[in-house]
Length: 109
Image (cartoon, rainbow, N blue to C red; front, side, top):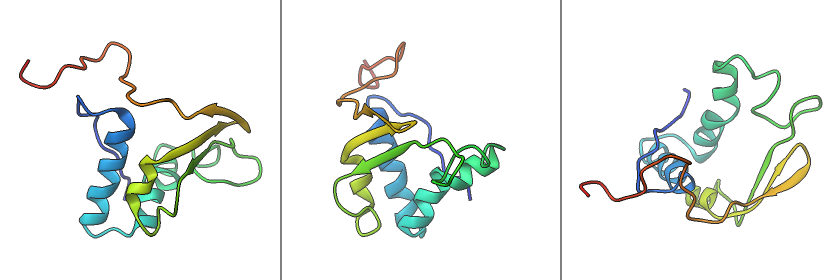
């Protein structure tokens, strides 16, 4: 199962991803299945699994480092310590981060 969730403002991108993972686990997926659904399974479904989606020799080396064990508590996926892209540290991006051009005002305003 590919796992994705649309961005719902005024939540930040990271909050949306973490909330989506929490919903997947509450719906019966294991934490590992939810993470794989957002990474390796999604990459395969998009036809780019040979390039990205998992850590393996010859693939793009993007890595998210979180505080604690997300397999024990999926909400840990929102506690980002570091982000690496191509082996270079590029983050984490400080919260709150709202996508460019997005309306950050709460619904109903």
